Length: 451
Image 1 (spheres, one colour):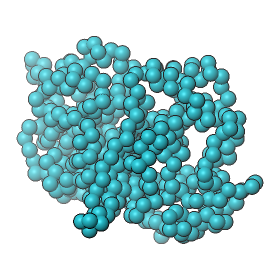
Image 2: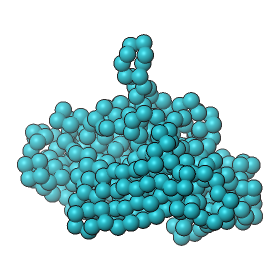
Image 3: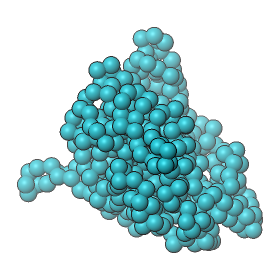
Image 4: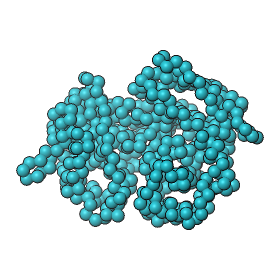
């Protein structure tokens, strides 16, 4: 394909194949006109996963896929001659053609070799990459240097595989220099049947908040795992999935404590980038709940939501900046959705509720509004839509404070175009957080927490 200078108009297509899903992102930039956006499409191949060992991934599959993608994006992507030969259109203008295209395949994806060879046979115009541990290290290693963070976690939550990649900076006394430490923690099940059987774990009911029989749990869980049959409004399935994820995260923490400890309370700023199939089902508040309780998190950190795999698609492009070889993208497109997570130490109370945080949100146009957080609530507070800076400030009360500094004051700024927060999570549950002793008491506790 013909190449254009990256600072001129540019359109690049990146496809990620992962967790039995295909994510496509068409990024367009015109830096002279200050115009930049990413079009996104998701194709769930879970209904076809029992055919993945047949001849699903063929030249014809990719022909139909890109033909349909052209309609979804309303973008001319392909040329077809009288012999039905498929070629990608060279970039001409917005809505017409591409400067490049790549497909990235997770190395844990089933039938990886078949997918890889089918893409190679389909078109030589496509650049192929593999998403593996080294790929994740390269992205996080460059991202932590480009960002203001000293501690970064990329957490991929899927039913079969749950992985945590971490890069954090530490001070080396010998060299008297700062160095970066990279680690990976992972749980991987062999197949769907082992995932279904995992609910036999004695710890499962320790976190469960719904009073179902063993048979009913297996029916719910089996249908979900095997068929991905779910309803976002089904409280039983939501509770089973929440309990399952909490156990998986706690197992990761128990087996990799030295790799995961002190996140959020060490020096500098910390951030989690959360992706995967499960957060798309559980939602943001409950996904964070499984991380907080499973990984025994404390302190404060930012959480970026990479639910569309944009960082996997364009992470290297973003961190490379003007040295990028495909397209130059800014932070607001690649890391757009952001929540502030605040996990103070809260003393146990005998009964009732107490205000543990008093805060206000202020902007030039909307003025000031107050909010309060009571113990033992787990409060996920959505911020008002804003196109200008929001200042969020507050004070901890009744013995609550932030670890490790024991500070009682908190303040940060939401800035559109860079770090724009969509929500604040303040976990006002007393520490340590205790579940049980059975599902009945868990149900009462969850009702008090998740208001």
